[in-house]
Image (cartoon, rainbow, N blue to C red; front, top):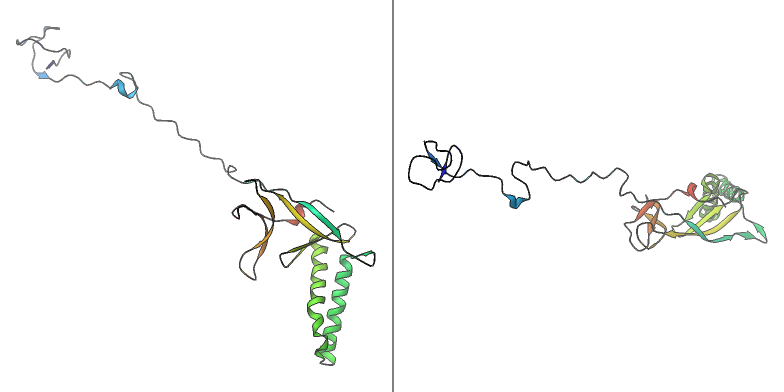
Length: 200
């Protein structure tokens, strides 16, 4: 039991405190003090643990890998370079011939020209616009500033893991898009923009 006035332990049996000699108007338990086991001194206020800093908006964004051309093969016919404007011209001429025969003679014998001439025109148009055309998700065609057409292979190193990256078509059938994708982990993926490639 302890004195309510000074908090000293009361060892005697009288009504006076052994320390302050005050009349014990009532006896109480010892005043409680903060425990030192918690690592704080008596009277020291506990402070909250520092909060971890919020990650910035740019943290966690993967840097896009650089693609390099491991193969550049010029496409030539009898020693002459194939050019993108030739593709557009041949494609347009074939389409005119095919539709002209269908309109005036109703001859379906020229219908076989639709696929090759249409493909040639679209390929030439894509090379004129972006200097890049990907056929069936497998073969890359590029053109230089002079309009010459090349077959190319693009590769690079993944910036997230140690894998190799290449071009890949993803998305539902009929609405696919070309992306840069890691061959070791398909989750490592970036949008592909042919305009970022080094000029031939």
